[in-house]
Amino acid sequence: MASPPRSLSISFFVLLIIPIISARTSFIKLPGSDGSRSAATNTYCESWRLAAETNNVGTWDVIPSICVDSVSEYLNGDQYGSDYGVIADYALAFAKTVQISGDGKDVWIFDIDETLLTNIDYYKAHGYGSIPYDSNSYNEWVVQGTAPAFDASLRLYNALKKLGFTIVLLTGRDEDQRSVTEKNLRDAGYLDWERLLLRGREDQGKSATNYKSEQRSKLIVEGFKIHGNTGDQWSDLLGFAVAVRSFKVPNPMYYIP
Ligand SMILES: [Mg+2]
Image (tube, rainbow, N blue to C red; front, top):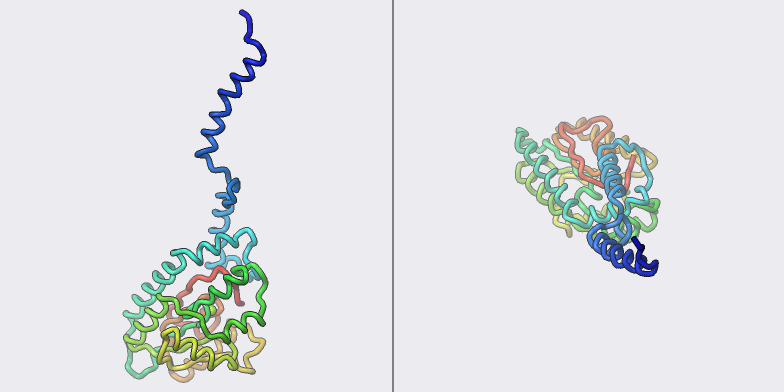
């Protein structure tokens, strides 16, 4: 049998194959081909975030560079606020089981940054934790005093006050930021806390874990009972003189030992 002319064979091949390639590429999304992240990167970054939240990473300085987009999407999407909401619900469910003595000694401790107030506008402009912490630019942000509340944290705060808890705010911010911190908190809706504890001169150089443990210890010596503690860092919650229940809210942007 005579074979078709060579040019005809090539034309037939082109006619047959090109539509198949076009059809395939129209519905098969190749990783990264349109600027999207690969499925493997997404999976890795979700796992990294879980490992960071559960303190399995240990001390870390910056987020993995391949996870900047993933962390940004988490923080700017619905999941971040939803996570705070679920944690607030569990904290409140526990709080309702506490027998309030009525002597003003039943305490709930809150950290401030990334717990009551969100600094996402600052981190948005500074790589979401992908570049090393810069105290100068961060302090410039803090003194503006414009950090908003997390909705769920404000809801929890007000519900705890209604239940009769005494609210203590324990922050790593310095004493010289007291007035701007108070104003920011009030502007954001937080009112009537019992104490605002900031780092004094004698606390400089201490790890957050030690500084916060010492402050909790002093409260216990004064007769306060620390039922609950909410913070975005493990150093808000661990150490000594810990609360009966500790509630860790998420923070995939930075780690404070
Ligand atoms: Mg914090």
